Length: 139
Image 1 (cartoon, rainbow, N blue to C red):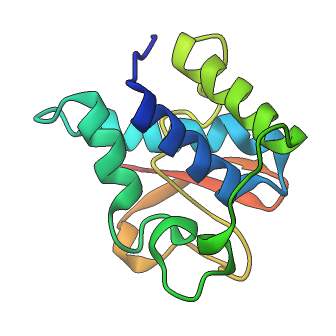
Image 2: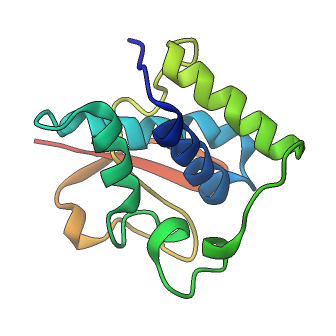
């Protein structure tokens, strides 16, 4: 599966992945897949709009919307290795070169969270990469 995103949603996707997982580079693709899995579930919206809506939804990605999250004010600089690596990984996800190892996960967490929030409903763990644990709804 390939995805064609306009420049703004694509950069926003990369920024969210960078903020959320820059300390776990091996999880860049998995975080991007969680966002895309949520966005593609919004079948009534064009993909570009769905990606932006998913990322900007309150309390969904703390690094993008949660007041007080220290990552909310972090911005990558042009040429930073981590920013370049995230952009490459996002491109791989969008072109289909990076498979969805999360098995259609739509949630993930890391410390200090120790278990899936009740708001997620009935979920099963699909993958762990470093400190990030990935989940999808079951049943």
